[in-house]
Image (tube, rainbow, N blue to C red; front, side, top):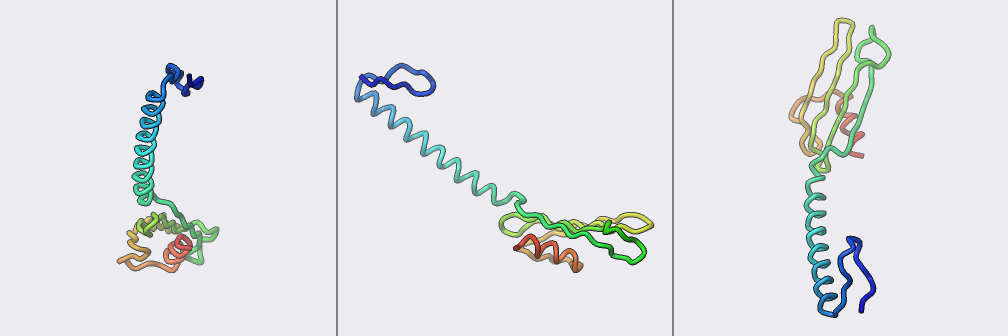
Length: 120
């Protein structure tokens, strides 16, 4: 009676009862998809979503803005700021945790600027 098929080419729905069962099955699948989507949406808040990069020269003897501070934060402004200080003698890296947009470690002006850039 019903001439349509679903995309998986299952047999045609021939009775009203079959149509109702099919609709109920689709509703169940839709509810599961909605719950799965909400779960993934909540989890995605914990992924790094915003990035701020500041390049600079910390010392007068080394030019070219080879040093940088990179802030990586999630939706709740939690994450870290990574700083690379380039000098003639070598390169040093520093990582500082950021919680709710602030750090318990002393931040340089460049690190503060990278975090500020991310929070905009």
